[in-house]
Length: 300
Image (cartoon, rainbow, N blue to C red; front, side, top):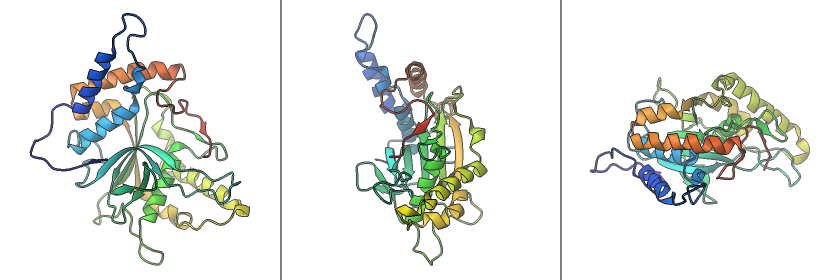
């Protein structure tokens, strides 16, 4: 994990991670014909590495005045490809409405990795949480097999709420969530979607707070109605509606990120991501093995 630690070296003018990736790409271009590179370019030029570069820049303070979820507080950790626990776990082996953990592209806050190399558990004293979904030219998942309207944004928000409640106080005491702060200040819990400005599959206007509430509510009703599989004990089901308003949803384009960070190397890297990921996703390929189209996921 990356941790924000003050140093005496100042802030680098260029992201050394991106510079190294660009160097590897140049050294891999050994073939005279096609393919020109000895490996698939999307192994390097993809939304995952774009997000890691952006989080590293933000941890260093570059571009930190551009977005509401910045600057990151001191002492937070950053992690990519994490997994959030779901409130909709399988209550029995045959439960068709249960699901596994939700994968997120990036997360920044106060947490630990528990139970696996990517399982995220928020610290009891967590005061800041930002979860990132990064896209190039794919869309956001529209639902899962047995819950068609439970889209990727709603699913991630529900898992964030579940994690916040697990890190809160015991029942009967006043609730303490990562969004609580000085009276009058904005919540410090964010769900951020990053995407190219010309990705027409992502339409921010479809993700209003009311529609987000509607989609989570439908998932809750359907899950609780299947009483034959048992009654869930998680606090989520009685308190999620009180916590949902604490999550600020933001849609940010990669163009905005590149402009705010102001690193030419990041701009070049993004241009190559657009070039190679645009081609790969048009032909239905993805180097990371993740589903490309914004359709439905299977409940896992």
